[in-house]
Length: 121
Image (cartoon, rainbow, N blue to C red; front, top):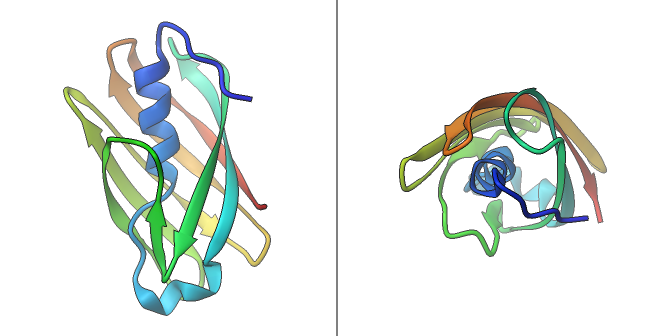
């Protein structure tokens, strides 16, 4: 499910914030993942789902956002995303088949925050 509405740029940033370029030591997380973004506060749409690919410990996506961050050996995720005047950051943890965490960001719709869930596809 991908829903594009008035706050789509902020939500896209939030989705991208979940994943970052990851060091090779985190290669155990390689593969296709589906990420669900859930907004809990702010003027963003309530939910988005995005496919993400992790390969060689690095995350790839179709997003044009600037994504930086890490996935550690134990699955700890810390990321920062920016695009235009919008930015978001997120952190959490990946396991072998799923992950979870928190995100916050600011874009054209104002400040938003919430949680994310990921599942290996």
